[in-house]
Structures are given as structure tokens and as C-alpha cells.
Amino acid sequence: MVKGIYIHIPFCNIKCPYCDFVSFINEDEQLYERYVNTILKELSFYQNENFNIRTIYFGGGTPSVLKPELIGKIISYIRNQFDTIKNPEITMEINPKTYKENDFYKVANYGVNRISIGSQSFLRKNLQSLGRDHQPIDVLKTVEYALKSGINNISLDMIYGISGQTLDDLQKDLEIYTSLPIKHISAYMLTAYEDTPLGKMVEKQEYQMPDEDITTLMFEKISDYFESKGFFRYELSNWAKLGFESRHNLLYWEDKQFLGVGLSAWSYIGNKRFGNVKNINEYLKRVENDKKPVEYSEILDEREKKREKIFLGLRLSKGIDIRDFNSVDIFEELSEQKLGVIDNNRFKLTSRGLMVINEVARKLIQELNL
Ligand SMILES: C[S@@+](CC[C@H](N)C(=O)[O-])C[C@H]1O[C@@H](n2cnc3c(N)ncnc32)[C@H](O)[C@@H]1O
Ligand code: SF4
Image 1: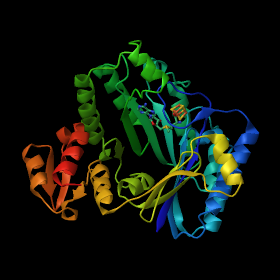
Image 2: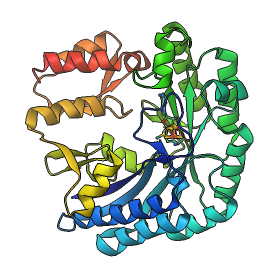
Image 3: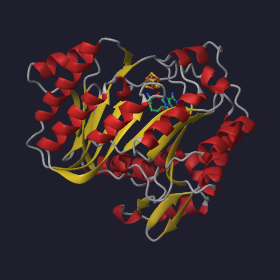
Image 4: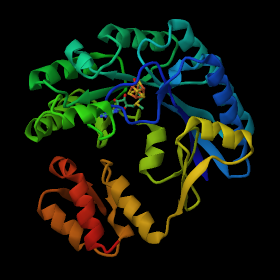
């Protein structure tokens, strides 16, 4: 049963130097319309699947480069064509500065009830170091407009581990984030992906990434501070006020089925995982010629499904059900090393374990012969 739909909008007003998402700058309004029509056609290819839609997520790229009417067109199509619950969670990623007050009223009217704002930091020097084109005030205005339109389920993205960022700088950010009328925060450590301009600058030593010691301290500080302000960590990089966890992202982490449409989008339906092409012309051409734009697909066997359960479950604060595996020894060993705890048949990572999550996952896979 497919429970969520992800729609990838690959357009942006700027290309940030650290970003490795499939996204590019576009100002051609006609391409927006053509892309949305193509998305609708792609959705129609899946009409025979078993749907019970609880979440719709517009991600990117920057979905808020699209006019609200185009967002509304996609939502109406999904609601008319697929079995959808009465009040699905409908999230839109929003870049500061892209939507005006009126746009929020419009998207709220089309059903958007959750927004995720790419705020990254409230310190100008951090925004500059990240190459962002917005100022802290733009984020405050975006929050204000959303609230006025009735959208109160607001999430902010934060980046830490930025060149030159001190623990005091981080403290300032944490105080501002937790003082805002928001329900959810995603905090990501800056990653310098190889093929990005940031990755190249790091390689040429033109950008100094902070030491691991300091990012480890930052990670602990973030978690302790957010928890002290009533934002509970439910996933490695995500904190929410009780009841405001991202229902859509939980589908991914809890191994549920979802359909992803648009450039580079991933889906997981039945026991099949598949992904779309990454080239916009190829995507448009294939769908317009009545072909699915899928370029990669694999069937997950039982072993792979168990591996997936480990990778995804370790990220969650509720952890993994150890009864799904045929040995408890390794879970006990990791608990003795204080990397995790066993509680009610579930294995959950401690803060120490979360910091070495990839090593723990590898060890589990090796010891459980997966
Ligand atoms: C798909 S982006 C969409 C947000 C939106 N386009 C924006 O930039 O405002 C989702 C989030 O991923 C995070 N992110 C993207 N690239 C990252 C990187 N290299 N390191 C850490 N976080 C990153 C940012 O916090 C960003 O807001
Ligand atoms: S970080 Fe966001 S705005 Fe910047 S290029 Fe990536 S998707 Fe676009």
C-alpha cells in the first residue's frame, strides 16, 4: 500500500556551493508549466497501484519557485485520482524570500499544511560562508506569513559545522531557533560533497572545515539544548515538539511504501526500489512519449530488507526491533560498549552511538551475516 507521494521540483534561484541535490537555476516560466504537466502524466502511469495517501511532500530544489497555482494543480490531481485520507500532511520546502504573504494564503487554500524553510543559520557570517542569498530577516518574515495564512506546522533547516563557526556562534543560533513559534527543526552537519564547488574548495584548502572534535561537541550541544527547550529528537538530524514529527519522512525511516515523481525521485513500492533519470530533457522526453522515466530499479530480497531496517532504524530514537534478527548477542555487545541500549526488545543508539552510526551499522551487518 503506497502511503506517501514525493514530488521533486528541481528548480532554484541560485545554486548553493554546498548543494548536491538534483537542482538547477531556471527562470523560464514555460518550463515550470511543462514540468508540472509532465509530473501529472507521470503520476497517471501509477494509477493501478494500491494507494492510501497520508502524506504529500514537495521537495527540491526549491518548490516555492513555482506559482501556488501550479502546486495546487498537483495536489488536486493527486486527491482526485488516488485514494487520499481526509487530512493528509502536505509539506512544501520553501526558500526564504521566494513566497510573499499572499502566496501562503493560496497554498494553504490548496491544502499545504506544513512548510520546511531552508533557513540554515541566523548569523550573517554563516549565511555568507554558505553562499546563501537571504538574510535572517527573510526567514522571520516567511515564518510570519505562514502563521498568518494558518500554516502553523513549521520546520526550519539549520546547518552547523560551518567554516569559522564557534561554539558561541552555535549557541546564538540555538537560542534564536528555539525562541521561534515553530514545531520542528532539522539540523545537518555541513557536508562537502566531492562534486560540488564547496568540495573543490575544501580539496584546494580554500575552505577550512572545522575539526571533528568541535563538530562532535556541536552535535551534543544541539541535542541537549533542543531537548531542554521541548524539541525531542526522533531521528538523527530531526527534532520536533510532541506530535509534530514529519509524518512523510517517517514513512522513509519506517520502511513504508511511497511513490516519488519528478527528476531523480526515488520510489519504494512492493519489494521494488526504483529511481528516475537525472537529466531534465531526458525526463520530459520519456514521459511525454508515454514511458516511465525510471533509470534504476532493484528488487529487495529478505537480506537486503533487513539491512535496510538496520540503516534506517538506527537513525530513529525508537531504534530497531531486535526480534526481526536471529541473534541478540551483537546488540548486547554494543550495549556493553555503551553505544546503544536494549529496551523492550528494541535496540536504540545512545548519543555516543549516534556519532559513529555508520560503524555500528557496518558491525551489525557483518555480525548478523547480512
Ligand atoms: C533540498 S534542500 C531544500 C531547501 C531549500 N532549497 C533551501 O536551500 O532553502 C534541504 C536541506 O538540506 C540541507 N543541505 C543541503 N545540502 C547540504 C550539505 N551539503 N550539508 C548539510 N546540509 C545540507 C539544507 O539544510 C537544506 O535546507
Ligand atoms: S540548497 Fe536549496 S536553494 Fe541551494 S541549490 Fe540546493 S536546493 Fe537550491
